[in-house]
Length: 132
Image (cartoon, rainbow, N blue to C red; front, side):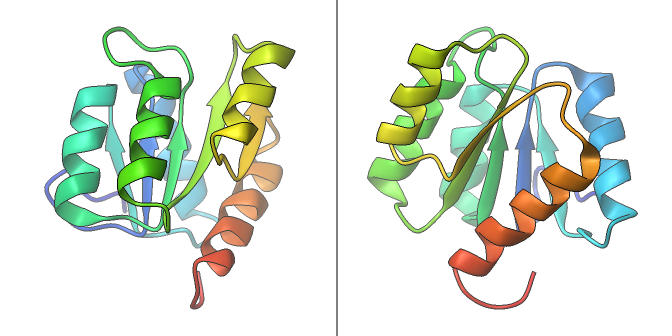
């Protein structure tokens, strides 16, 4: 079951498409990624990360307000141990290169196979230590 934005989770999903990201969290839970929190904008994501320090963040690139690239940069500056996966439906090769240069673990384009996303999240989690 996904946890609320006020509870510590191993994984944080950040996407402004509310129905999509809630459904995604549910589908990931079916793949044994249980400790998942969901937020819907960059500012809330930064607040959650500062308070709870998840191990992996799956981050939409384009959101109103604070966008994914800015969140990525801030996370890697303040919490370099957190792995960030960019997950976007509107990216470009230039943005992909920039995200990877800023320290993103992976850059995935929507729609992505749920198994590939789950596998990438588990690989990112393994990189920061411990079992997913």
